[in-house]
Image (tube, rainbow, N blue to C red; front, side, top):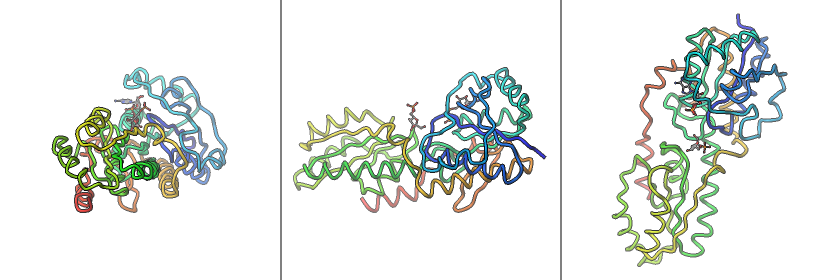
Length: 319
Ligand code: ADP
Ligand code: F6P
């Protein structure tokens, strides 16, 4: 029976990470484990930034965005030699199992450590919702609420001037934040890697629309899809719409986690400890409807991205 469990966050931070820590730490103590935090992701393993924590370590952090144990990217962690250094540090502390909260890259690190003898469980932590083994990732719901709140505010001012608003949304090639926000805000256009938006056609449609004096136009664009500044300039010069661009940026990654985010993150953190207690490792946890599931990390990484054809269909019907 394992006695000591470590927990770290890796890659981009996301609201809900502190809640997952809380779920894991509390459950750990309930199951008679000693719980350790590792600061700065895999770097903290290599540089021995490890502390044993009390069961109430994360209790006051449930409403705090970001990750209190910090996060980092350590490209060298792909090397076997560096992974063995991490294992030496863990052995020094007697830590036998690890919970890794992060994205696909972090999952790979967790799998490699499992193969080298430290059972690891991955939790999906990213606002992008780009982890196919989970319906929703830790951070997505909060980021979506932040995006929708920001877009609503942009529409207040934009519609007061009969303007066109172009809003660039994060996602790192994953369209989910833009698609969900597009539905929630009734956007006129969404542009993502899954939409085959023909910009020339859109400009033509906007020119026609301008003749009807609409209240405003709202266009949401997933980052890394096209040059939003060039698009905004083009709409301004070619359609007659006074157009403004807002790049939402890192505001999308911060803030108080929503209630559902907290509940799901706590559940996942708690479940990770239960699985480790049963000797299960090399897997990642996800949501599947209302259930929690776990999948082998290699299988999870091979799953195709969910394209949400059902939601795209709904969007087409309501626009
Ligand atoms: P995310 O976890 O959000 O996908 P990254 O892709 O930046 O973010 O990965 C986070 C960290 O995971 C990397 O900085 C590295 O330390 C580790 N990592 C990424 N890929 C691998 C790999 N193939 N093997 C071992 N560790 C990896
Ligand atoms: O993966 C989360 C994310 O916020 C992406 O949406 C975005 O492209 C990227 O991280 C930004 O990374 P950084 O904080 O390194 O600029």
